Image (cartoon, rainbow, N blue to C red; front, side, top):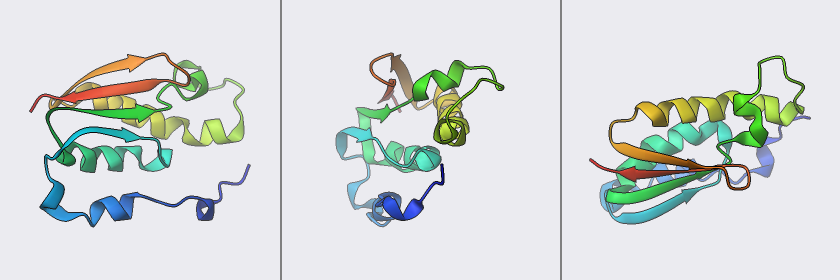
Length: 116
């Protein structure tokens, strides 16, 4: 499957241009966007959410591929984005500014509560 980026309306440039005006003002943010930018979204979202606020990331189990062996038969789009989702999951586990909870609902949702 060819990944056609023209079909995506990328929200990251819009968020990056929001400036400091919204720093620490959001109670809840839900991210269901281009998976290859999830880590970039997190870097920006953590600035926008207030202490005690929650960021939700969709598809963090990514068709179960995040626990599949490297040689598992996967659809091309699943294999393509798998490493990006894994990278986000790993980064969230070591981010000292948040507490996380991964829910096995649908394709996985990870909730991150900002603690500092």
